[in-house]
Length: 402
Image 1 (cartoon, rainbow, N blue to C red):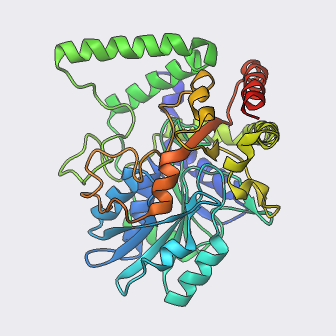
Image 2 (image 1 turned 60 degrees about the vertical axis):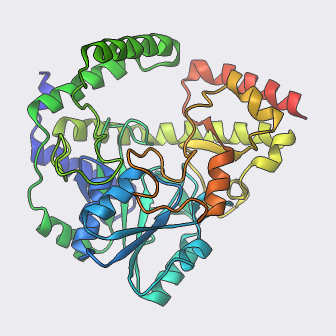
């Protein structure tokens, strides 16, 4: 394996933890193999367990409910705020009971949620708050980065997140006691197997060589071909990503839980953080140009209010709008974006168990379900050679919608 994989484990991990804390303006971070494992570690460090309830938005991933169930607690789903598509204070307040211990404040796709109101609510009810920054990095409220407002925060670094290290996550807090408790409970994390790390390394090479828009058809072809071969051989592929935690907790998983981030991926994450300022500005530029086009057309009524909030500095993961399924504009979107790849089109997505098994009752969070039914994700990450073409096509689509 390449020398990169043989990098010194403690130094690479520590370097990334320090770099992430510096990026957030102080505090401390503890790195894990995924954001959900960081979430699990925080809950364990606070003694959350059987009989306790954790409130999280009904606009999230199944791995969050899985982590709550792993500590023996009950996930309680609250309605979102359609202005931000993040955790809504009114929805949370309606869910608080004497058993509530933690509120998850999710910042969705780069848009900060109303963390001020949520903090006031938590203070009034003597509850802890975890900011879920899995979909957000470096967005700010009045100049302060998300992830630094609450008792603790989690970040994710898998290949669909703002900072791409293939896998990875972190627990962060400005309170040294929180970090000390996490480290005391998990003094040494189990590593992923050598074979699993090898698959991750091969995937890293594959995405580096072929991860560009012009080569996307080739990637899809080989993905479908390998799927056909596996189906005919009746053989499930060994895991590359950590995708065994989308439903009810299993007795065993194909990897340790929680697990350590491989040091060579911590090295990659550090490198990605160094180039983040340029990437941040590229995303902000695409957001500004996209919003200008949307607001000049009939699309403007579908844009969430948060994008116009002067207190917010948004670094987008995806650019969101809420377009009714029956609107002609939505039907034309297929010529521009992959309409089958929107998140979240269900209150919990993806999930390998039923919504009811994970604790969600259909019809209980109407604003969340409205968002799931109308959500549109426009890209905020585009190669320079693709950006001009995309914006020209979007401009044409906006003109035909007026």
